[in-house]
Length: 420
Image (cartoon, rainbow, N blue to C red; front, side, top):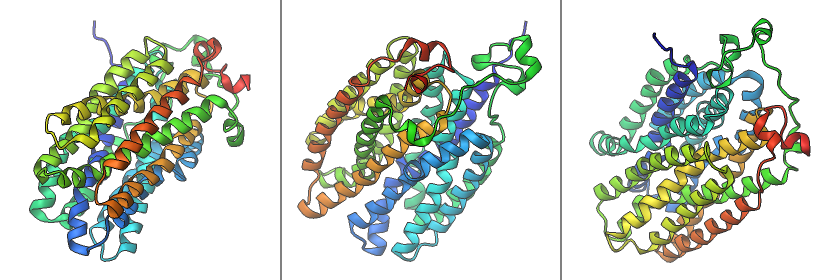
């Protein structure tokens, strides 16, 4: 007997592939553009760091708005137009002649990325999965981590053909790869005869063609929920540290004697190792208390961060790389899984947009602060140590959330939103 694969897994694969490409170029791989821009234009580390921080717009000011749009209009349309916009932004970046043009191109890329990554992809996956939400999000977000496989290729293309030619080619590639994949996405399972996780619809649901859903809450009401506030602050800390490390890891390793090739391999290894964390912590979250699993993921990230200021000794790279990367990968999955468990699907897009918006605020601060400290002190060690302490504050915030009520776990329509 032939068993059909639940269509939700095809959506996971499409989102994985788009995340893989976008992340390899404009998130993890963007560190490879840092030094070529400094050499050509003579801009300071602070100026370029701020430009790269603007990538966080898709998860900052735009994220709650994109979440609202995803809840109202669905993910499919947003992903299609997001892919087109990212391609345009990358091509514009290839014609940069001034700092203002650089900032404009990065902002356009951010607008597009907001429509085809993170908020939108997590929302559509959460609409198709519940019991296996941790595993599904783990696989989907592994696309961001697997982008590490492409970073050596990104570095090679930049060094061989120049950064301008490379970024224009990457923009065209975004259209060739992303447009067909965006058309695979379907917003909800019910119109196709399925319920969440691939369960068949009841005869009554099949006749109606829909599943009843709870009332969506207002934006300001969501901000009053204690659990969401704790998650927001923890995510702001996490992303502040992550973006600072991602943007500055290659310049930092150069200051402590690493070659550009070796530093590029480390930059590639961070997202690759994070895949293990995404899959492992996602799997654990389907079986154990999601809040405690997130606390352990933050602990792993913090322990790795403690080793970063000591990387003059080569073997310590593994003490930093493995726990730090696994931690950031696990937390990425657990944000959506915890929201799904605590609040159900009502206003999920808006809520994940709020969380990622707070994260982006930290993401703008992190790289800029690290660049400012380097310009001021000519080293990164102090800012790395300070970031380590911030991570352990995030652990406390996660523990303060408390456990999800049983009603939120057992029924999509009952959640902390109703309790408040």
